[in-house]
Structures are given as structure tokens and as C-alpha cells.
Amino acid sequence: MKKLAGLALLGTLITLTGCEDANEVKQDAKETSAQMKEKLDETWDEVKEKTNELKNDESFNELLEESKAMGLDIYDDGKEVAVDAWIKSKEAAGELTEKTKQKARELADEIEQARKEYKEG
Image (cartoon, rainbow, N blue to C red; front, top):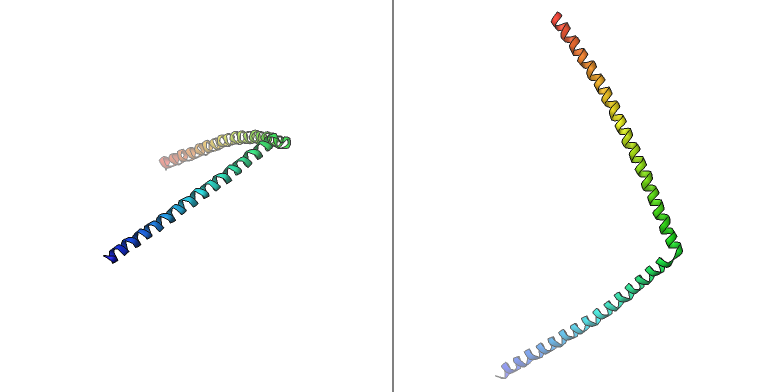
């Protein structure tokens, strides 16, 4: 009976020790979570502050405007080049079509000539 009571007491001590450890882990996790939240809040505040500084920075706004203007110029130039390339490709395709038609006529004439020669021969 003493052994059974001793085992029960030992089991209770282990359980209590485990509960204390679990509570410590929970407490540590809460503290760590609170610290992380605080750091994230500080970082977010810094980001917002820097963003506001940049919005109010005249040179930054000028740079943005210049970048927008440059982007629009590049877009316009690209569009112009694309249209020119499209027109040239259409012209080239037309030339190719004419050359193809010419070769087809020549080939048809050769075939007709060969038929005449075959019939005569």
C-alpha cells in the first residue's frame, strides 16, 4: 500500500511539475507574443512615418513625375515602333504574296508548256 501511495504521490508531483512547466511555457509565449506585437507596431509606425516623409519630399515627388513622364514617352515610342513594324510586315507580306503569285504563274506556264509538248510528242 505504501508503494501504491508513493507511486500516486510521485505521479502527482510529476503532473504538478508538468503543469508548472506548461504554465511557464504559456507565460513565456504570451510575453514573446506581446514583444513581437510591440516590435511590429513600432516597425509599422516607422514605415508610415517614412511614407509620409516621402510624400512630403518635393524632390521625391519630382522624381516620380519625371519617371511617369519618361514611362509615357517610352510607351509612346514603343507604340510608334510597333505600328511601324506592323506596317512594314504587312508591306513585306504583300510583296511576298506578289512574288508568290508571280512564281505560281510561271510554274503554271511551264506546266502548260510541258502538256503541249507531251501532246505533240
